[in-house]
Image (cartoon, rainbow, N blue to C red; front, side):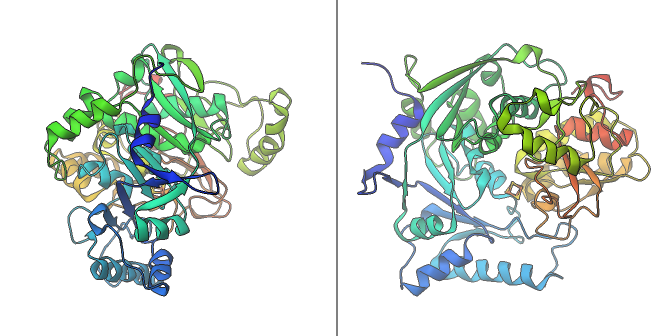
Length: 468
Ligand code: SF4
């Protein structure tokens, strides 16, 4: 009999039953909640006089609305203050552990979960946030869910969901110098398209993936959703276990590792689809349009609309018009106004290290506003211990408090007017960074730091600070 992949094994372990709708009722091992998508769900719970089934499997933090300049209460924005207050009341009422701004552990939910060791191999994880796939880096099956599913999970610790097919993406060869996980996932989305993963889970494997750190794997899995995949994951290995060793919520390391080994894909596992990528010829990538699939290598010409598949032509035309770019132009050299280094994609310690290494002793270009926003309070403390905050501040970056910041701009950090932003976040949708006419270029932390210094998009491979 053919072997099984991780998704099949984890599904089998967590499936409660098949529902009349044809979907499966799946037990969720870990439920992460935050201030934006939980209030309504708690409201529905209260309406029906239901309790939280497993408060000890539910963890909360606050990220989207947190102001990153000051966390003094009350917040200047009364709506943000109210959202945080409601989360505080709900977590207290239902006995849910809450990593709030006073805890020293607050941060972007997808940074906090792994950092605390809550995210573990073989788990099912859900969170009312699109980028929950991040946790798949640990060999978990992690879903971004809507408010009604948050309600269902709070009330029953289960949710109704259809089992996705699995596409294995084999990434052979090694990433060249100056090319990182962000470039790889952007290239994958560019090739397969933003809808290429619909109905699929992505299993990332191959030499390049095995060689990645956990932070790089998180960056990769984080953006699976941008390629249309429901989840993305990497099979657990020694890199995974070593990273988790000693973390607060890893209470029984041996059992965790044994379960991870049991759940990982068999050597002869069968997949619904398989794709091979060669990492060795990848280049630093930059988005040019209004979705993450509109991406090119930094030194390559933007495509002509005619050269694109029929279904992409209309969006490309809109993108050229909105961004103010033209086919045949190159992204290298584009003047930028704002740099944002942070988010659940690239707000971890290693991301900040990579950006700081590029800066060396140079300064942010005149006229550029540059923000560094650690993904969590623990990331911030570790970065300060290494003196990274000083490197950034000396160069003219603003060193901020942990939060989502300008990734989604549900807080005071926003683009103004048509500003062009070099951002390490994950979405370049119209208006995503807070200005209805603002423009976003997605790139790696090293590329964003380089852009801050030069005041324009540069090829990190040519940058003075070197290709970290
Ligand atoms: S950093 Fe951005 S993508 Fe990540 S959770 Fe916050 S708003 Fe969502």
